Amino acid sequence: MAPMSSADLRARLEGWAKTEVAHANRLSETARRARSPLVRAVLTAIAVDSEKHYQLLMIAEELLTKSELSVDEFEGTLNDIREHIATEEDAIKFFESQLRDPAVASNLQLTFVLKLLLRDEKFHHVVLHDLYQALVRGRIIGQGEEWEELYRELDRYL
Image (cartoon, rainbow, N blue to C red; front, side):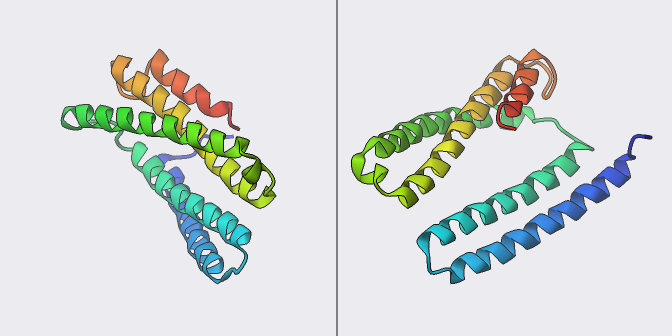
């Protein structure tokens, strides 16, 4: 099978991005109409993920043409990531403590929603930590051992 051309890949990514944003909009509207808090929570989470997928697909398309982080934004990016890593640590502790509380544990719907949040926070924490390390130690953005560690980390969640 011949490799796909860059133009074909860009077109496919853009096409799927449009599908994702359409799903996000439709699910958001359905969530707004839902009376059940649990149904609304799940639909909202999936709608937000679909919006995120749209954004990531647009960035993936952009990666086909450029991928450098400018020197001007480098230090500010590191500071923002460092601050968010600390926030993620606090969030993980908070959700873990809430899930240990008997009042929360006895409510399966609440437990489900809090576990969704905890799963995301743990994933964000690991990815942000690895991104930070890759930015600090990596010589070329996107290449090298530090970046490969970041790329491999995602495989643990697939």
